Length: 395
Image 1 (cartoon, one colour):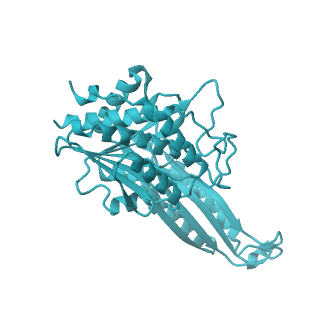
Image 2: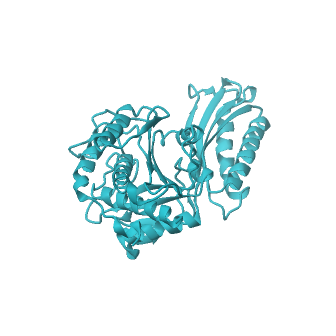
Image 3: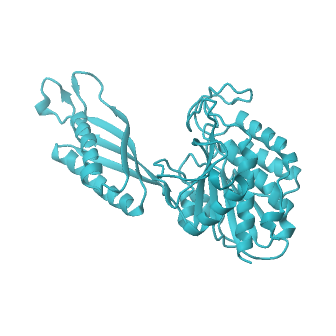
């Protein structure tokens, strides 16, 4: 009999995981400031006698070496940071940090991975290989995953594959959503500073109206999306912030546009960037102004590797049953910096459903976002089952 069928979840640990989740939820911290979160994770691991190390100031890494010797390697990743949102969930363990909230379920991701760590450590003498468990800071801010990879989180020894999950309020509670290929989009941000020439509104011909140029840029960006890009390739170009002008009777001499661009493939991403900069600069010049474009290459898209996905789906089905395993019909144009992991090694990112039909369901990043803690052991079982199956496959 294989280890994949021998092990069992120790439900005695559930209440401890719920307590940790509530502690994290009450004390959420923004990206790269997760000092108390980091301390809570390390303290919990120490209680269980599990060694860990700090990486990139607030990240925590746990290496679990199988007692049967060297073998395959796998990384399990959870994000730990919160959002700048004022909580309105009304739960008794609501955030005590004004203006900061775990509105994306990262407190759940963290405790799910803690549960997996506990069980993989408990059963370490029964498998060979390495499971590296990564508690990653700064997912809500670009670059944290990249920094950890650059710091060596996927090396010494080389990690062969990586897996992450995200709680998902659009799937029934306890179900899993999987998809081969694109799962989330890349996310690049831009800031356009348009410079014109100020003047009086009564004599517009003596000025260069930066607001008029900005309006033409916004209109043309939709032309770029619809007419200058492949219509069968998803692409989002969004201007979310405009700043310019001082008075109703003054021709504005400067306007700033801030926004984001989302795509699912590197080909579309690279092509769009080139056309975007050329188009914006050309429009400003055509109208007698100038545009400085700041283009920030952010998170890459997450693309699921077929082999890793197959093993994950097989493992999840053991835990929740085949009927509770769903194929996601389309990718999300949201982003996750797990894309850096997926670029570096074969990876899979899956959705864990938290929607309960009898209760109100709020989307991610909503001030009333909430999930039932009973999802934590389910996620922990899937992580654990997958890691054991992956390591065992190498034998």
